[in-house]
Length: 134
Image (cartoon, rainbow, N blue to C red):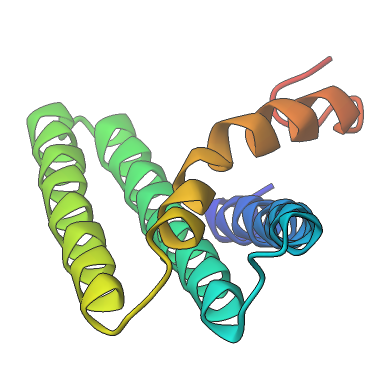
């Protein structure tokens, strides 16, 4: 599988997983009687932030791996480090703007924690031969 397909596949997995987790989170909000339209928009905003972040992280790592294969190891390392810094600053700014616009802080921030469980579950249900499996 080429790099572009890997990045798009992983991004799709994260996007779908984020939406499923956000739906579960919204059900909890509704069950507790705290559901409002701002909670919905906050959850979607958090999901979007993490999906975009994961896309750029995946793309950067794939490009860096290609550079490393060509022998440009230092340049690959620096590009990953720069990407990490820029993505962190952008996520912070996006969260700041969301909070300033009246987003529900918990609903906005909680989707940031969904990525790792999503990746773990996707590995459990991944097909044999995908993601480096034999």
